[in-house]
Structures are given as structure tokens and as C-alpha cells.
Image 1 (tube, rainbow, N blue to C red):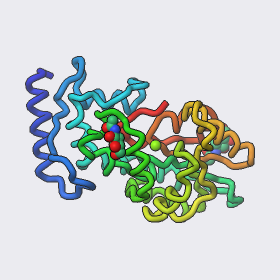
Image 2 (cartoon, rainbow, N blue to C red):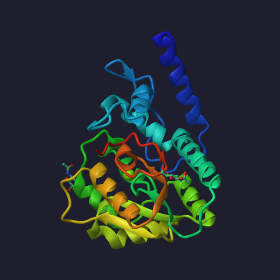
Image 3 (tube, protein in one colour):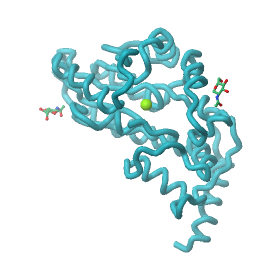
Length: 258
Ligand SMILES: *[C@@H]1O[C@H](CO)[C@@H](O)[C@H](O)[C@H]1NC(C)=O
Ligand SMILES: *[C@@H]1O[C@H](CO)[C@@H](O)[C@H](O)[C@H]1NC(C)=O
Ligand SMILES: [Mg+2]
């Protein structure tokens, strides 16, 4: 497609979507940002898609030219629709199975940008939806507030899985020292029960998330659990060993964890 036509259509789409967006989660920014902005010849929409499918890896920050685009995506309809679509497919899969009823069929969930959303934090201007340098001090302060909202589609899947008879195991790279506040945050957000909540021991900080989560899942399998499904926003939640019979990726164009 002609590039000018593409830019024109992209901005028309962005504008018409902004005008008809009734349910923003946290409207902390104006609804601007066109997918037509380019980084090294790649549009922001193509950049986001490449990130989602793990073609672009180990990226550090959202490209500055895509800050508004990513903000618009995260606050608008499309992020929610994409989460809904992923969790719809997960639920169809879950419903198709016949569980043994021995309590060993588990579904693994990640926390950040999966069960809970840090969007109110990333939407702050100084964080730029992941386009600004990560600040562990302010992020940890946000975690300690314990008021991250749920990702609605993931909460819905979680509730349906419980009613289907699955046990849930929540695995996060959050440090153990935040256990109490993470529990109160999960409960506040609507996640009331789990078989296990596994956080990262304070001693274990050098391994990658992929290695850490693979080791945890291996222990679960060795303890006799069957990992039927696994939901995360990072590929490092879903790749490695003992990943589960099926994995489901929820979108996250704001940061990359290896
Ligand atoms: C990081 O966040 C802390 C706490 O909000 C703040 O005091 C500090 O200035 C921030 N650091 C940078 C480099 O922005
Ligand atoms: C999950 O995968 C294992 C190993 O491949 C297989 O034996 C089992 O039947 C699968 N379970 C489901 C529910 O698909
Ligand atoms: Mg996560």
C-alpha cells in the first residue's frame, strides 16, 4: 500500500476509534498516537506485532516514536479485545477437556500484566508506557501500594477455570519480600484462591525468568501436577521446559523480560 495512504488510513482509524471509545481503563493520556509512526522503516503497529510474536527479542524500551501509539493501544479498545480473544480461546480449550478430578490438573498464571495490570503505573508520563527508562524504586513503590487492577479477561478465565475444577498456580518473578502485599492485591483484584503462589526467593536474582520459571514448573510436574494450561504476557513465561499442554500469550508491548 502507498505509504501516504497507509498513514492517512492509520490516522483516520486511530481518530475514529478515539471518538468511539467508551470504556478506557485509565484515561491518563490523550487518545493520540498513530500506528503510522515509523522506527527504522517499521510502523509502530508492525513493531508491536513483531514483539508479540517474539520476532523482536531482548528489546530495552518502547521506541520513543511509538510511545503514543503504545499508550493508545493499551488504553483503548484493542488491548482489551486482544486479551479477550486470547482468553476466549483458552476457555474453549479448557472446556473441551475432561478432568480426572484428582486435583492435580493445574493452570499456571503469571502476575504482572497477566493476572494484575500495572497500566496505571506505566501510563504515568515519566514511564511513558515503557518508552522511558525503568525505575525500580518507583515500580517497587507501586507494587507496595497493592492496588494494581486485574486484567479483566484473565480474571474471567481464572473464575471459569475454578468452576471447571482446575487448580491454579501463580508464578511470579516478584521477590518474596512482597508476598503479603501481592496476596492482598490479588484478593482485592478478585483472585481469591490458588493451589500455590510462587514468588522469587530473595537469594535467586541472577537467573533469567525463563530459567527460573522452567525450574518451578519442573518441580510442579515432579510433584505430580499436570500443567494443562499456562497464561503469561512474556515469552519467558511460556517457553522453556514443562511449559504446559497449551500456552496462551496476553499482549504486552510495554516491556520485555528474558
Ligand atoms: C525513580 O523513582 C524515585 C521514586 O519515585 C524518584 O525519587 C527518582 O527520582 C526516580 N529516578 C529517576 C532516575 O527518575
Ligand atoms: C498433556 O500432554 C501430555 C504429554 O504430552 C499428554 O500425555 C496428556 O494427554 C496431555 N493432556 C491433555 C489434557 O492434553
Ligand atoms: Mg508478566
